[in-house]
Amino acid sequence: METSLNAARRARDLDDARREVADLLVVGLGATGAGVALDAAARGLSVVAIDAHDLAFGTSRWSSKLIHGGLRYLASGQIGLARESAAERHVLIRHTAPHLVKAQPYLLPLTPGVPAATARKLMTGYRLGDLLRAAAGTPRKLIPGPARLGAAEALDLVPALAADGLRGALRSYDGRVVDDARLVVALARTAAGHGARVLTRCRALGLAGDGAEVRDELTGDVFTVRARAVVNATGVWAGLLAPEITLRPSRGTHLVLREGVLGPLRAGLHVPIPGESSRFLLVLPQSDGHVLVGLTDEPVEGPVHDVAEAPEGDVEFLLATLNGVLGVPVTRDQVAGAHAGLRPLLDTGSGQGTADLSRRHAVLRGADGVVTVVGGKLTTYRRMAEDAVDAACPQARRSTTARLPLVGAATRGIRAPWRLVERYGAEAEDITALIESNRALGAKVLPGEPTTWAELLWAVRHEGALDEDDLLDRRTRIGLIPEDRQMALKVARHVLSLQP
Image 1 (cartoon, helix red, strand yellow):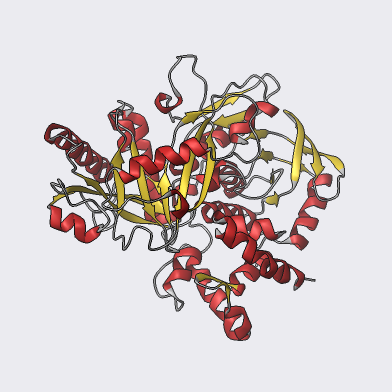
Image 2 (cartoon, helix red, strand yellow):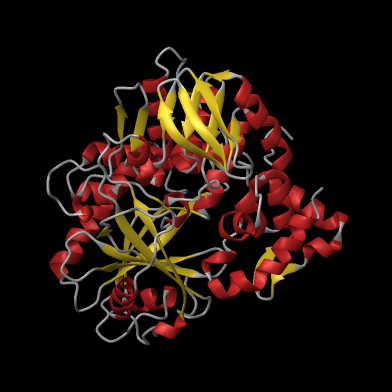
């Protein structure tokens, strides 16, 4: 399979990368870096893409899973960014990843803390967001329009809401990706299908305009990758390789609640944060039954670590905000997990707080010729990638990724369980075939958790998973709950041992 990533392909591609001169070296394999690799490879360029860790190791796996239409940017007057976001949402939901991206309904409960004038203003914003949808060409059948609901309708969709004083809710729809890490895996594999050499566990020790010194983190070998152009897409860590770049990272923390803690959820929630005019806590039901609650926007001072910690203060803030709209509060011991990601916000020198800094991306060329792409959002990764390749390789032909389906990009006519279809698309049939060939692979990795042994085996054979961390933390999301992760380690290690 041309799009397959695995240990054997890594060895071959690593050998070729050491011998050849690529048209483009991409450093970083989050959504932006994987998107750059795909954009360049689809233009016919030879590409080497490396990451010190794994696909989606950094910021890209810690998002709120939102593929949004730019409503927040409208509130701050960033009309161009709002239009771009709506256009990129359309590309994902309609053309490139319809299996991974769907519409999600959200309720904004009209509690006594939301005055009538504020509710009218918010509904106006939702309607403006609907105009952005229409301008992008997205039909209402994919992203329905907003509506005001009565209290009974709101409680029917989210019974956990406090009924006392509830006047109803504003319902809106936006895009969401079933799993942000799986989107990155699809991007990387699609790039590999176009000839890109996708190499994880390869750390760039230093960059220049004609390549990089690289260390194989599995063997310790140090070698040089030569390239005609270089893109630094390492996000919040970009300044380590391009010291002239100044970033102001911010931390976004999410809580993980097990299925049932909030009762049945037929919609997510937008909960206004007290004292803030355009920030909301999000309650985000996940396809595996878990619920994410987030997120914070706190400046990060000092060194940026590979994996951010979720401070207890963030947990307390999120719980307090959530419990302000619930009939029965969620207690601290009901929080099954908490994680934090770092946003790579460009320091504009404005003195603004991180919550107010623009999410517009920037493409910057250093004196050594290295092109760095920073900022942006998960939703706009494709546009960021296109702009970065345009800057690094100006003689290349135009980008084709706006209509380029990612691996598995189909949902109709597939004979497989829906849970697999929305994670693997057309490849769900291949997972099903694995189980049919060996019924033992249909066993669940954990009791009460839907992931099967077959999905772990597929990740090793075709999705570039090299160890148990890759399997549990990124190819599946079992690792979001530490207790579940510990219980699943034995199965993950056994599946890895099945490979030659």
